Image (cartoon, rainbow, N blue to C red; front, side, top):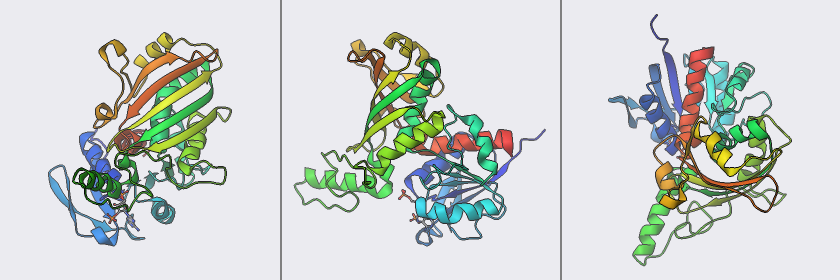
Length: 340
Ligand code: A2P
């Protein structure tokens, strides 16, 4: 039987994540009948490459989704709130990378290595949410441990690349670094402080409880994806002057004891994980190695000697790929194979 092919749209095709979505569809040979590339009116007419062809970007409008089977959205929360229901109404399934729909109880929040079964819930609203980049890589690394011995509490600190903020932020780090190296004055447009040669403990907006929205996304999304509201999560999210690849320092407390050696063994066969943990060879996860590939690198696995059942680890993953585009395309693959 001939393979079924799909009409696919990428909304936000000119952005950092949208661009990578197009690349992932090509790399993974997604069964595409037609590909529509959508962005704002500013980009209408721009040509983007897909499998050797040039495709003209179109302005996203209410009518953009007629005849589309799957739409991958990465055009910001406001755009998703407005266009995703319209797209779903015209019969397409939306995989949305923004935070707009993630905590909607009728919208599944999916990491294919963790809760692929929950995709089935897409039928209610026609929307599937792609989680926050820092949450995705954390649950890929932690879910096997949670399944085996139950995670009681997670303390995480992130070291997040500027690409997570989008193209403008990549340019900002580049321009500021260039200016600093040339003793020129530094311009700030994206972040409230200089990001070059600095760290900002501030990602997304501050909330009333003193945490940032990014930090609370890690709390709520982790529980939703791991399907366990009893897990305690506390996060500090930090922007660092790295272009691609988020890193995280993670401390967990488990219900049952597990040794660092057993965590290492467990993660060696876990889906989506690559253990990089050989300190005698100076081998540990780093963003320069995480960038450009799809696995979550896990290392520095060691016992937390300050509690009975504690483990520390350091992880890194490509925030634009596994943290966004690859995860969305993996979701689309399951949809295509099992549901459409
Ligand atoms: P455009 O390039 O035309 O502004 P990033 O996160 O890297 O900044 O990318 C954001 C993406 O979302 C871009 O493709 C951008 O298109 C798109 N976008 C932003 N606002 C809208 C909008 N109102 N309608 C459609 N696409 C939008």
